[in-house]
Image (cartoon, rainbow, N blue to C red; front, side):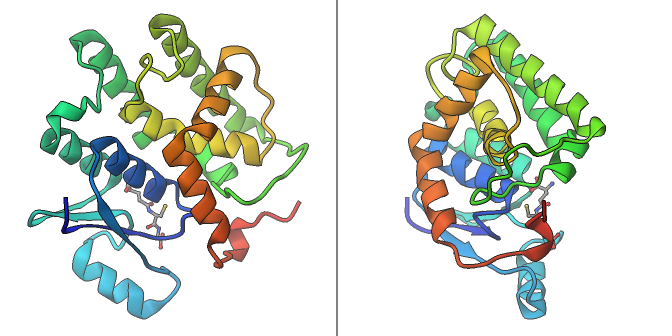
Length: 218
Ligand SMILES: N[C@@H](CCC(=O)N[C@@H](CS)C(=O)NCC(=O)O)C(=O)O
């Protein structure tokens, strides 16, 4: 559908931009992507007019302006009900909403200690103790879903918004060489090879911008 625009920041560093873009892919929405560099004060001023939080992502679609990744995902699910962006059955849908909520509202240590950086590789990276608890919880979530619904995605054979929410975590595990095994490792690999993820990774690699403070010296 023409006329949809997604404002994002960096493809390499912005995990929320990735989630919003993957949500658009699940919705089947043909979206124009506008990247803004948030380092530039004039861009920030312009973004304030679009997104009151001065944060990306922000979606414009059919007269609606939606900011915050969770709101964008909910909006798209409502606009495109036939796309089944959440599991169709009530119990798994409640499960999916819960783990989506956990990702959106939590995992602060994981997100701050292992910022998304698609292009980088840190072999042997030492994860600090605070983030280890978050990693354990993510693995529990993944293993419970993969056991209950049979994979290869968290809720079975089709991707849902739950996979969208955890996709940047898969990328972080690759970047920071987080040792995982079994079904969780297979899941990480499946998501990293998933078509829309591959497309985003390719575009992130081509992106010129480097943000020094997010390129951890190690
Ligand atoms: N809760 C927000 C978080 C969005 C967010 O933190 N976006 C980052 C990019 S990943 C941002 O815009 N940062 C700009 C800044 O901090 O200046 C969401 O779900 O969309």
